[in-house]
Image (cartoon, rainbow, N blue to C red; front, side, top):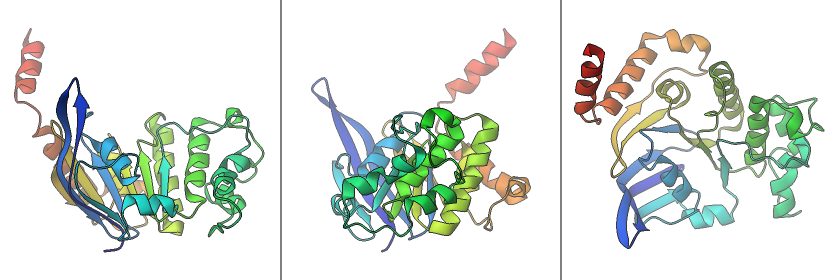
Amino acid sequence: MAGLSIQNVSKSFQLDGRSVPALDGVSLELEEGQFGALIGPSGCGKSTLLRMVADVFAPTAGHIAINGAPPQQARRDHQIGFVFQEATLLPWRSVLDNVRLPLEILGPGHVPARSPEELVRLVGLGGYEHASPSQLSGGMQQRCAIARALVASPRILLLDEPFGALDEVMRYRMNFELLRIRAQTRTTALMVTHSIEEAVLMADRVFVFAAKPGRIVDTLEVDLPRPRRLGTMDDPRFNALVDHARHALFSQLPHEIDHEVAHAENV
């Protein structure tokens, strides 16, 4: 199957001489060009799963395939782009030189589908090609990081809370910027987010995680039409999906939390 296939993946870490499970039996599918979002409480293994897809480390059990190839092969073939919560730009390089960096590492034999100059314009940084990162806002820095992640023409784009450090207004602006960029690149994408609304707005499929160990407890098929716009969030279907995801998340929390809140309010 083209796209991303994760089959019965588990991951354990060694801690103080004992095995601690981080993920247990996670399975999900994304067709080529689809956008997936992972939501769940902190510590449920969302970022761990993203890093296994990126071949940062291997699963303890199960299988991952990117367009039919294991992550190791996809990484060697430069099919994976990664965007972190922080832009991690090199401060001594300009916007254009930061975007060019992966191509310099790959060497002259790699011909990208879009030039660094085209990608800088695509992410809305035309006119800032020679600016340094310190001259950019946080949102502009993340646009540069997205362009850098796309410059090697990856088949899959992984995003780990890419807009978590931005204020709410800028976060929504960046959501729509990313939607616009993906509409033109058609890259398969998988994003970790703590925002239910962001997940539903962006994704074709939302995977709801529970913790201890991390596992998928629900999958939402988001049938909202594209292109998604600000008015999409007024659609009753959008609000119904957000409510569904919220209930799936909070149904996993201990019932004692409700009792603690009620007690605190009555004191």
